[in-house]
Amino acid sequence: MKSKSIKCSLLLVACFLTQALAQKPIVSPRDSVKIIFNGKTIAINYGKPSMLGRKIFGVFVPFYKVWRTGAGAATILTTEADLEVDGAVVPRGTYSLYTLPTEERWKLIINKQTGQWGTTYMPQLDLARIDLKIKKLKTPVEECTFKLERNNTGSGTLKIEWENTSLSVPFHISKDSLVPSPGDSSVLVINDKRVSVNYCRPSMRGRKIMGSVVPYGIVWRTGANAATSFVTQTDLVLYGVKILRGSYTLYTLPSSKQWKLIINKQTGQWGTVYNEKFDLARIPLKKNMLKQPLEKFTITLERISEKTGVMKLAWEKTQLSVNFQLK
Image 1: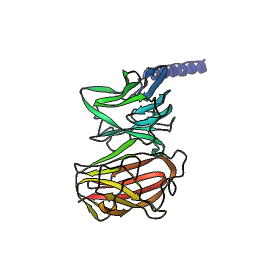
Image 2: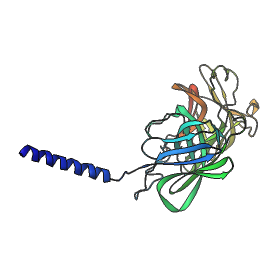
Image 3: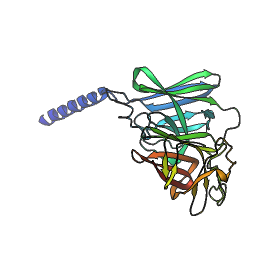
Image 4: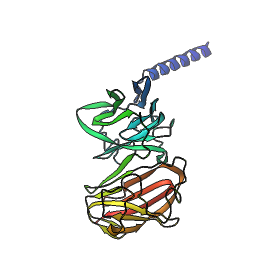
């Protein structure tokens, strides 16, 4: 009799706990949004965190660190149509979405890895990094929210809204041949001064890159299409060389052993137009080998301290870097 009483008590406790857990609210529920163009669906599935009285951007979501752009498992983009997202080519398929927040400029990162937890990010699997337009909202948005809005036949806008920030980027269904080398940029604000690189991103597409597509011993445009531009609002020092604030073009001289970064004073030209007489400096680059191949050529500017940073160039399994500091 006593044994039955204990069993009944344990059963009641288990039922009470089950009911209590069932009633406990989910902190960051999953949500989804979709849009259909000509029978083809574009959808985003994501975790939806709330402000909960917290300061979000710059604190809960720190600047200069890749963010899962949601909560829980990675945010997923699925498209049944080939897309062009502000010039970047996104073939139909499934991708993860991340963002790189800064005070002045955000980037949307479309990554080919899927099914992972949101904090698992592999930059070598990036398909594209795309500038987002930033708008301040008058009324704060409590929950992180994705939107897909229709503009007209075959085009729309992707929006991300949270706290007092609205981020957006246009997209459209691709009808023509896809652009193989979309434009991209990297921006670093250091000591209130802006340093930026604008370039185009060629892809490996199954090719041998270093020593083949990019031959050794020949000056390379260091990207694709128009020349790669470098703009600094402050005087810099790279490897002991003073670079006055202004606009320049970046080239490289590839080698199996020692690469050099070429800073050239000519600007606005096509990438294959190179005039050595305008060279300001040729700077040695530190070379490292990547464990995983990088599909798209990538240039990044990263902060080291309040007055120093590093420029990194990476493609295939090669990463090149040079530190710089404010003069």
